[in-house]
Image 1 (cartoon, one colour):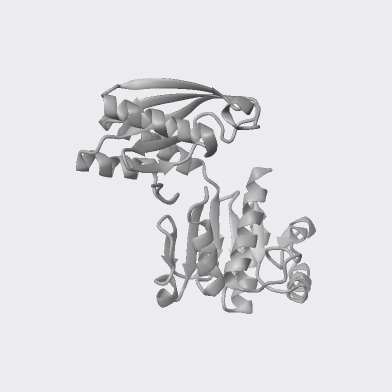
Image 2 (cartoon, rainbow, N blue to C red):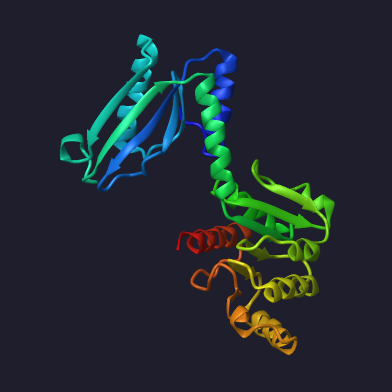
Amino acid sequence: MSAGSSESLSEALAAALVAGEPAALVTLSEARGSTPREAGTAMLVMPDLVVGTIGGGTCEWAGVARARQLLAEGEAEAGLRMPLGPETGQCCGGHVTLAIRRADAGTLAALRDREAQGAAREPAVVIYGAGHVGRALALALDPLPFRTRIVDARAEEVARVSGARIARTVGAPDAVAEAAPPGAAHVVVTHSHALDSLICASLLEANTFAYLGLIGSATKRATFLSAFRAMGLDAAALDRLVCPIGGTAVRDKRPAVIAALVAAELIATFAT
């Protein structure tokens, strides 16, 4: 059985240690050539549960089996080297080395530190508006490597937001925009065109965003840009305004579909 990706390795290990359940940390310590995941990727293996993934397939299955053997036989650590070629039923062509260690309190402390450092490096994403699209986007971004915040002045809408890792703010979205950190991504999906305009104008004037997406049509974009030009906002910044969000190749306006498309845009923004 595998756990969902929203559960961190440290959370899973903490629960296992409290329950007295043995666990092993399997780390992809070396990755050469073409491999499913990069070096440093890890998963937690317990007798009847696996949390995380090192890429799936034969490599992961072998790692899980060896980790469970280690737990059953009382070993402290083990290693496993695997070529990812025809002899193992794979065609990646790379080579991996797995480090397998019985997990303890020290492992938990190291995992917590590593996860905290990783979270601090994650790009910030601010969603303005907790309506249908905003909530769908928050849910779509929850398992992804972003520090996501959703803001809306309507407390009842913010209360409906799902996502274990999503920060929620009840307040004025335009005020949050004014205080936004440089290099963040912003997705403006409020219930009010006037509020959309205020938020976008503030972000465009600062011009420190990595991504600025506005829900709406090409007509809305043209209307907003005309007003922003009249305000004297920088032309290069205006060119970076993404509207419609999610592109135009898929003409499906269901909130969950829009959210998936915007999530892909955000991943592409920070991967380049």
